[in-house]
Image 1: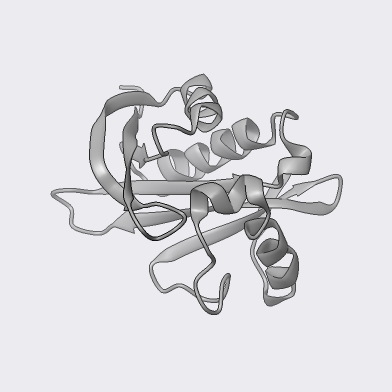
Image 2: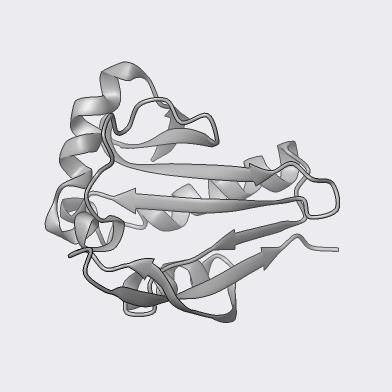
Length: 155
């Protein structure tokens, strides 16, 4: 497994993965132009055996008084259970703490997404609290809770 910067050529496969039920149920419908340029996100492709297996992205808070990064990721459901999400998180944590100088990282899975919460816990994310009615349901008709999790750099 390796991470590499996303390119335009990755778009069709990332869109296909985003639209699969095991991903879209948590990520919703892809926005127009996904996964095109997002001025706020830095995106990497997760590769497994030379094939696109998913995506990890992060957003950085630039204000020095609140400096941190927020991470999102998805892995093709056909590749779940191989440790790809765990390894992708380990690598992006190293980038964000080791290279980008962050001391705190957050991730916010739906409280019902127990598989994601388990993976995030394996790499050291700890629950910080529940964000009630935080995110639109996949149907767009209601809201669901998310679990705010944080990772603090070792002191």
